[in-house]
Length: 113
Length: 111
Image 1 (cartoon, rainbow over the protein chains, first blue to last red):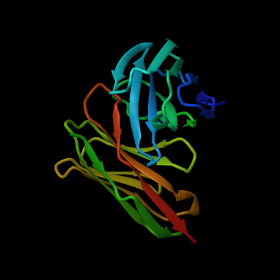
Image 2: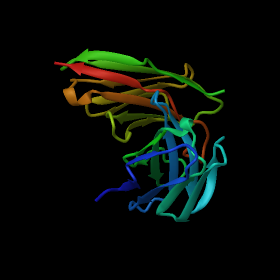
Image 3: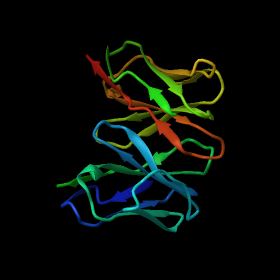
């Protein structure tokens, strides 16, 4: 059973389109995250939710909108995609603040043409 | 500002020992983490240090010196499957799981 699962794994789309990535975790964790890993492999946090409440919102364009319908799901919607949005987006979860051990999904590779 | 530095690439031979260094300058500190990431895969947790000293976990050990802003990951008895990127990450403050990652060190193990 996959602990943190994301879909789709690959996404190729045109500039200007809107796309969503879904994430689900079956670990019973309270906290979920979105991280972006660029072409230089730099992993940077975007958002964090604790029990459906937004707790971390880094300096991310408001074209990116996370949504957490329940604590097991955290989706990421991106409007008006730009070339610079091409990256691998990782969903992760943890037991909560101050644990440090993140469980990552397999990543969703987004390519914007 | 937040700055975490690691060497970009390292190579080593199967069976050898390798040390991957990480230096950090962050506005706060509440723990240092090491993650392993194989190419095309998700990062996986390796170790955690919050106090000075060495934490040993099988073939892997991690060391922390808070006064020097320095950590290293030591890998012993290297195996081919240890070829991966190793990411150093710092948690800047208490009661958050916001991890600031370095750019990672790509380790290649040769036979």
